[in-house]
Image (tube, rainbow, N blue to C red; front, side, top):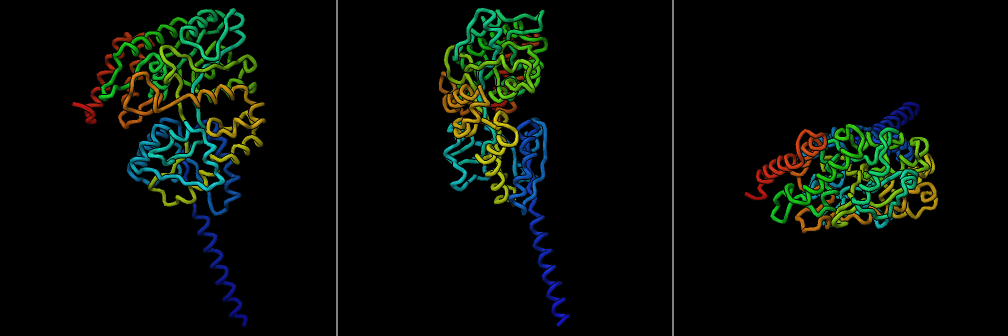
Length: 438
């Protein structure tokens, strides 16, 4: 009897050990970008692991450019390095159609109809959701209400670029370290070209006409880029050709920018007294317009997706459902405060009284996101979807090349006409090589 009991105990122990080993083996590798909201997600990931003890999260945190390279290579080669990828609105529909990422299907508790339509549509292909939004954004005008008032000016909720230029001239005071306006100049399809595409859009421009021929030497592009270079040369900070989001955020928080047109996500930082010296002096308006309101403000989301190569799709989807849910947003609100929650994804966030009390930018941000339409973002009809980018695989290389030319023009190294001519030639080469036309 003793032998039997011992044998039974040993067998039970082995079975228990096997069970524990099996559970411990379910490790999800999550590739994400190194920004504030994602770092917060890593910190709060312990709550997911406590609720799902059979799943362990392993984080791979990378700078934006490196992240894009790593996940693109992995998903294209079916490398299988990651179970969850952080991707954006540019990649999602392209990869979804290629079958590189899995369709996401959530249960009713996820409240998928609560997702803002513009964000949900931008992360879908053929009516199927391929990535779930962690936070979303548009672009808008953020400005120092005190400086505008002191200058005897007003800022309407829907300003024009002509009016913005007038205000910039009035509030520009470099002797006091205050520059009329700060705008992106650092080259990159997601850096200066994100802003410049919206500027070209509202001037009546487009990347490609209906025959897929690049339009960079068209009059709207010439007018838009000439205005941009002139505006920043006169009223921008020194070294604007090297400035992108983080550099301008630092300048604004130090009180050095009178106005800034950029991602709505910046609003939570510049209105936070812990980060900004001018938190109580900022106000918000919609992105400025010129010829048309179409495409004047961009649309973007950082979202979570499952590569087709992942062998842990069920666990990955469980994590994505948690990280992009209303429960997660409530968790951040409870742990970090409602001014710190990831925004731009759900209507319920903007209906929440605690959020509205903490975020004076909420109404302007929501209006900007709702007004952006990737399917109708140019005055003339275009063959592509996307507001600040064209959702085709070739755009990334084209955008990078053109971005370098625009930055060079801003730095005074070449004329606007020369920069656009060089960009046009590069774009034509890419489009011919890809077979869009001969």
